[in-house]
Image (cartoon, rainbow, N blue to C red; front, side, top):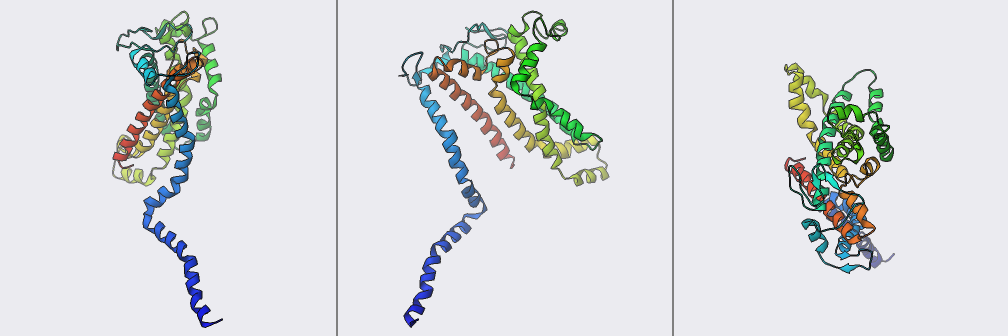
Length: 337
């Protein structure tokens, strides 16, 4: 090998390794946070492909009106009709949406004059009541399961049984329990004034109560499992120190358990809120959308006759869920979670 070749050898190797060195230095300059975002880039691209496009397509559909005809561009008219109550996503046989809520609108505690606002009331009431009691019951179940006692595995398996039952089967169970002729719970509950004594599943108030109870019965186990995961991540040494210091069980719960499980609790509530606002199958299998229509019921019932209006309702529902999610995420961010 000539002197020139020997001199050129390292230079060629340096040129070959140059881009690799540059990439390595660039990744080192990113830092941990930047490198984490780099690794998440494929996930963001995938989410954009499977979520962003359908969202934009839904918004595009909401700008058209096609009532059993060719689509006609109407701009934001569908949204205006929803807000003013002039929309026509009708349900066959619908007379009332909530106790005291008529289609043209009057309610004892709030004034509703629009189908969207009536369905929104159903969705919000169902979500608020079900998530509250599911969190309360799930927290209690998680505290019990977090204790060391004989047969804990069997109790844990028994608690999650309702959660494993498919929604349609669960709906049929509650439908039969409150059927006017075969239901064994109608008479005792009607004597207490909780449900209507006749046509129980055709009464909006009774049906909403039954559907909410069915959802609480099914999904409390889901909340219990999520909260239990948070409880078991707490360092047991903290309780030992607190006990040595003379802290009572209530003080340990208030000063150790509750603050440390709150982030997990917030995530669990967020998941359940998103899921509850999309309720459809349970309502349809127990009482039908004509008795207790939610926002999802409006979308499904309207889609076959007016896809533009259905898309507008779906987009509004997604917006409401997004606001709820961003609110929880912002709160978690402020708390440094």
